[in-house]
Image (cartoon, rainbow over all chains, first blue to last red; front, side):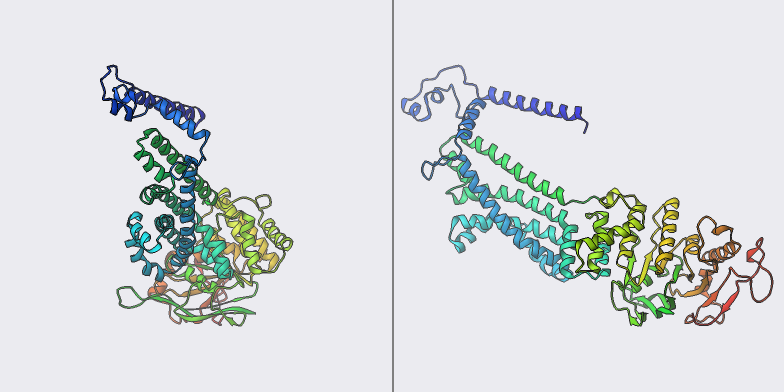
Length: 280
Length: 308
């Protein structure tokens, strides 16, 4: 895209964001009239809210202040139910990495095998087709019952949801390696290991990376829900805990952070995918 | 010296819904001497590529066998280098790494300096000095095909198999690479088996041109001996009085006789011993001088019915 076009799109983005803030700000302005409030109720929800001057929905400024607080001290620990947002999100990232990494360790070699053998491809296919559409959270009770540990169970759920896209893409990528490259390897009497690592792996790498990118996206979606279920730590738990505290500002901060981290994870995988992609 | 011998080669497919097997070609017999350049010409569907793949060991014949240097060909081997129709370079490797992949497969224990030297030598040979570190996507079609040729030559095979290597190139590039190939083959005395659709290419490069009749049931109809001097070049070849008789003979075969041949082989035709013809030379019998104005006035002379 030419430079002027990029500038225009950036300006438009800023404009849209400003408009969004303005509407949000307008919608959360305190209404003019004062209402008599029950003193007990006023004590509970704060005098401004009780008198109808302010809703529980925070204004952009409230959220900005909250964000600044979190940014200043993201890693504090004040007891099990009051830990910094940075710590919570680190727990979540750690679980996603662990579950995703384990899934990659299983899916890529297994996908390689399935992709190389049409017999295995057909034999595994019905299982993959049935297991793939199952919501990963449906495994949660089974995981809790067998593993008997909530943290490990959430990692298992991440594992199971990251598995399928990587497995399917690896098998597809490996089975779709161009016949002529394999023929080159055959005429050169290349050993099976060398063929796997020097021909098939680089040829299938872009497809494998696409599978990994899809997997990490799904894993990041699922971890929030999983942590809401099992509780304890993590950004999903943080969101649910703040809902119980009725701190919408904190929830909004967490939502923003979840989006940011998700974007970063996706971008990392996109970079890696670009690094192994070859133009033909 | 007989280097490669093909005996009774046959390829047939059983149709997926049953019925009589579909015979692509049958009773294909020929041999290639060491250092000889042989082209095979024929219409699409006559099984040329299949024959080449069988020679390469990438495909299996339904019947018959291939013997190279006294050994039966039973699978792909480093003894036979293949230049594929669609260059078949690995797009994630640079030109040099593509050649290096072959060199390292050939000499597994060679050190880096040695492999580097071999790769560079063959890339220089095909005129790719300076483009070693380019990926195939950055190379033109002709350059890609040259990398393919360098890769095939670099393993120093006993025999080279070329599957229509210049089919996808424009005429100018093709000419340049043909010259290159001619030079390299003259220098290395390489034994070559090549598929082509281009009659001029066959006359320029080959010592013997095998003509295949149309498939199904294709056969080797006859073998044309290229009697032009071996030091022929693209610029002067068409001035040789033998050129047009040979060319006309080949074109005549492709246009009409290849079809007639399958329908009704000429009397006395023995697939195990196809005729060796020399249309470039004046006919022995009857002793009518070959006229350049009417080169087709005489039948192509038949040198021998001996098994080549």
